[in-house]
Image 1 (cartoon, rainbow, N blue to C red):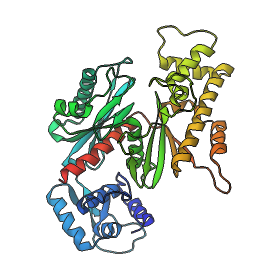
Image 2 (image 1 turned 135 degrees about the vertical axis):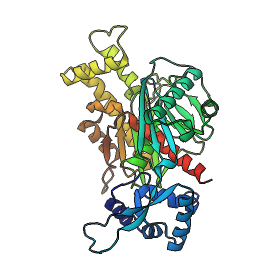
Image 3 (image 1 turned 30 degrees about the vertical axis):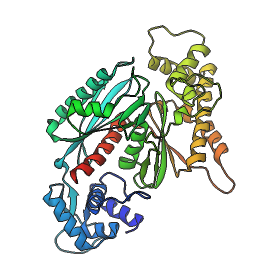
Image 4 (image 1 turned 90 degrees about the vertical axis):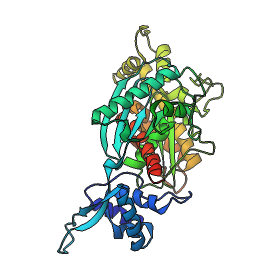
Length: 419
């Protein structure tokens, strides 16, 4: 079954599922049983004959694998309503769906503004969520672990479940993360570097844990639940307290050879430039992230902020002044937007994605993606006879970061459940 046919099959169903719509390319093939389960989850509900076409296997093989998954309690049979164009009479078709109650996972986002978590069943349906405040200052490893454990307890309570229902917990955190080793190399709000956070959490929670850079998990959210489900390749650029990127190629999140992912925010764009919070100078983040805008506001605006004013309050004040026509405030956002245009142009030059998605809380500051910014980006990337890579704005709510972590948790839980 080709891509268009599979998308059409899914569109006819009531439940459109979650997860990439197509198999990962240029990767080690997954066992057929896992491919079948993931195809069912992506479709929501799907007939056996359509799975056979999609996976290019025989109907008999589908029947054998599906019987095993039904016996394991991971999928179940369900009726598929006939479409309005189907004039065939008789009983409804029998299809397959994920048994959501077979397992649950939690996805978590930790930051220096607030912590959030979502509880997903095996089908990817959200069945619980929690948002808790976080201190704006640096924290120790033990404090972070306690915050994560509190999120797990509260999120399970929101759905009336206990830890025995959990298959995996996944965590997104800003900074430099070694996914393969489960190690936080550097995080802007952690007091220690090189923390084996995955192993420490597994010891505390008694549950398998996965950790990743939060920008990677924003890309996972798009790949599993958003605009990236049907795209072969795309990039998600996040603008929040920092600047991050997640890149998908061949329907698969790319983390690089060392598992560290990509650090767009720490790409040097100005030699000996502004000081970045990572300790280097001239990083893109040092011109676009919230702390960069606050730094500029301190020096450019006529009166200083009170010592008790929070960075968020400073940014809101700065944005309000820009909207009211204050030239200094407008110039701060304009300069940040121009640097962002350069960063986006570099993404296109390096990866040639089919689409760039801009996401993150700071996108409410529309000066960062004003027409003059996107025009400059197009000028930097346009080639004769070829249009620039499109840029879409996806200003999701804060829970989407945790939802992306939930996708990572589902992926790992599926692997474990199938042995």
